[in-house]
Structures are given as structure tokens and as C-alpha cells.
Image (cartoon, rainbow, N blue to C red):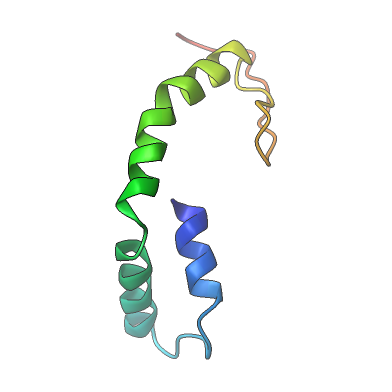
Length: 74
């Protein structure tokens, strides 16, 4: 979700002049995310959580790397 909102915000020019203008743009970008995308993310959560657990917080194939936790509590 954050990636979708950030992408929309970076496409708007000129940049926000005030904090209030930025907040209005964030709200508009958030509202513009298609419901189907939100539903897809929601439905993928069990798979994503299972991948994180099986990798003990390590790399799960996404675009970022997480540090492996030595003190994982489940």
C-alpha cells in the first residue's frame, strides 16, 4: 500500500508547498488505490506471514532484505 501511495505522490508536480497540501495529496492518493489491490494484499497475508516465519525474518524474495532474528518468539 505504501508503495502505491508513494508512487502516486512522486508523480504529482509541483511538490507540496505546505504540510496541509501534502496531507490532502496523501489522502487523495490513498483513496485512489483500487479496492481490488487492497483485497489482493489482504488475501495474500497468510502466504506472506508464512514466508516470513519459514525464513525466520530473513529474505523472502521481496525487494528488501530483513535481518535474521536470533530471538524469534512465536
